[in-house]
Image 1 (cartoon, rainbow, N blue to C red):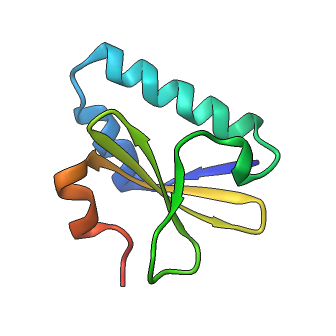
Image 2: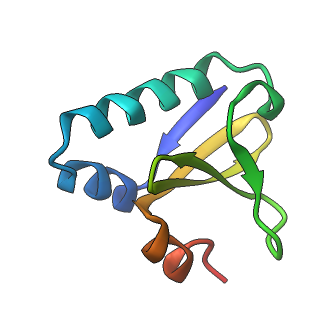
Image 3: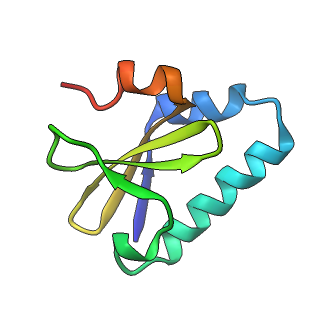
Length: 90
């Protein structure tokens, strides 16, 4: 799959101080790259109310992304309590 990173997502990851959490994010992104379809990725859930919005659980954090035409746009990476306030954009 092709991956595109939103500017906000890159900022979210840069703010993380935990090396362990950064390694988990890297692992999830590698899983996305190597997957042939969304079913091959662990912990993926479709978000209600938006046709192409999905999330992946990474501990207490969520990786929000859009999936269209075999392209993943990673939009945000925030704590569970914060991500649903800003993702998906309505």
